[in-house]
Amino acid sequence: MSDQTTSESPEASSSFDIKTHFPAARIKKLMQSDEDIGKVAQATPVVVGRALEFFLANLVQASAEQAKISGTKRVTAQHVKSAIQSDDKFDFLVDTICSTEAKEE
Image (cartoon, rainbow, N blue to C red; front, side, top):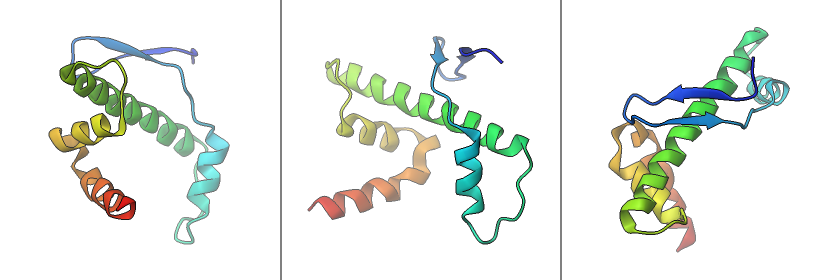
């Protein structure tokens, strides 16, 4: 596998390079820290890491779009929050950002 993978987002016409890779050993260790998970196949942490890379790339891209809409070049937590609230595929994170706001107050 190469160090850079070009991926086409279904929503956007531009592609992006994913340069960050998550270590499979650490993912496996995290998975096995759950008592309900027994043995983990060798390919599973690699696939989970790859899925995590794509998820983060999509979240960062959506946050960058929110920053562009607001006319800034710097992505802030508010842009990430706006991206999560405006896109249905990030609905599962809405509770997380709400609980984070409650802790900040």
